Amino acid sequence: MFSSGNVTSRVFERQIRSSPPGASVNRARKFYENLVPSHTLYDVECPDHCFRKFTEDGLFLISFSRNHQELVVYRPSWLTYTSVSDDTLPPLPRRASRFDSFFTQLYSVNLASANELICKDFFLYFPSRRFGLFATSTAQIHDSAPSPGAVPGVPSIDKITFVLLRLDDGVVLDERVFVHDFVNLAYNMGVFMYDDLLAILSLRYQKIHLLQIRDSGHLVDARAIGYFCREDDELFLNSSSQAMMMTTTQDKNKQQNREDDGDNGLNHTQPNADNNSFLSGIKQRLLSFIFREIWNEESDNTVRVQSLKKKFYFHFQDYVDLIIWKVQFLDRHHLLIKFGSVDGGVGRNADHLPAFFAVYNMETTDIVAFYQNSAEDLYQLFEQFSDHFTVSSSSPFMNFVTSHSNSVHALEQLKYLKNKSNSFSQFVKKMLVSLPFSCQSQSPSPYFDQSLFRFDEKLISAADRHRQSSDNPIKFISRRKPETLKFKIKPGPECGSADGRSKKICSFLFHPHLPLAISIQQTLFMPPSVVNIHFRR
Image (cartoon, rainbow, N blue to C red; front, top):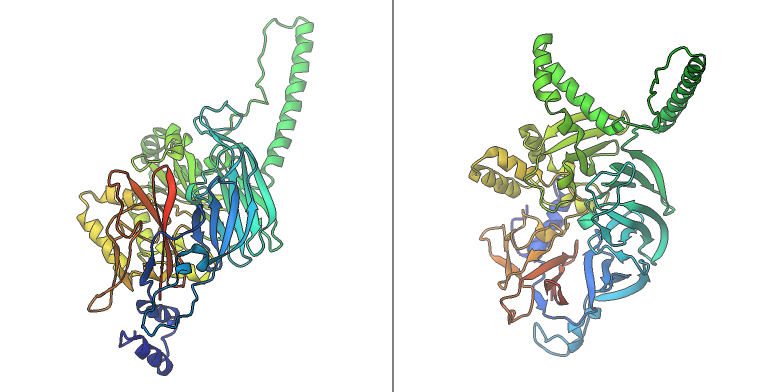
């Protein structure tokens, strides 16, 4: 902790005092109390693009063309100019109000075909190799025809293409295509990346595709979890099915011979081996885990049977009807899987629907834990170890995103909401709605560090989401006494919007380590946008 808030004193103090073990980065981040985006350029002249986000290392700004066909990548270059004025803050030149004064376009590459569009809300970054994963898709079909193995009620997309691209030069390295499937691409909800592993959830066919991103830039199939859980499950079932069909054929021949000999006139119907009524492998493991958990709760067999009737068999069909909503890596061997009804898997607002969480071990193919979305023990884990749910990247910048387990201010705010809630069960459900977390959905900018700054999270936060725009500037106040105002962020025109009736939304793109931010305000379905650049002079 620095004893002074003056930046010069902090530099001298850093030279003569070393940081405690493991605290060097946190101590260095305190310099951002002095280095803030204190100046704003309003309504900057910029290309009519959809700006997505900065990469975690701050090397690239990702954007898409307005027709959602092309990827446009920029490199932050900062504003440089000379002045002959003697003023402490000389007036900025006219060129400073242009977008290309801060960003240099590296390239533009076409990713989508004529009938496909780039999903503007989907982007994942592989920082160690500077690879970017993008998605294109055709239009969504809500009333799709039934398909073998598909979940009824889940819409279909004719073609979904995942494109792995090297961001240094825009070269497409590999692609993976899903046909007549449905993957939730909004804000990376259906795809999760952990180091070099990639999990893609097919909602329509209830299959988790595990892929590995090689250093060469190839997407390699590692495993598929769903109907089968082990690599040899399909081979085993096919061999068993063939043996069953051979036995059935022999029985039919014997029966035909007996009928020809006039043994009897009865027609014996044999089961159809092609009619597969088995539950999926992941569902069977889930049911067996629930059964064993209820069985082990009691020691008396009579009480066990009664408990199974109430807790398992009575809800058996409800468990069978569950589908996978969302999935995330906890580590390289465990997945956190969220189950629920079909309506919640494709609907926008599923907060009121019952949901369940399961921890799946990919090595043993076992369910090792199962929770309802109102479970207090899961909430305690979420409160104390929330970093374990959110940190999924090897990037050092993402390790310092504020959470309940690394910030006393965030923990105090969480406890305030808990004490304010009328029903603890409803509070737990509300908190666990965010699980599993969407991958790379938070900004690592130090200006969202709640140990440094205080701000209104209803107007702005580290979460990658659009917000309702406010005509008043958003204040960032220092946590350090006497808690002075450090800087303000105001989206939209400098004098405010003339049309107060239209609903406006805004998004904020903060650079991960520079005092640089972009605010984008637009009215619903009415581009172009008002782009402001906030930087330090």
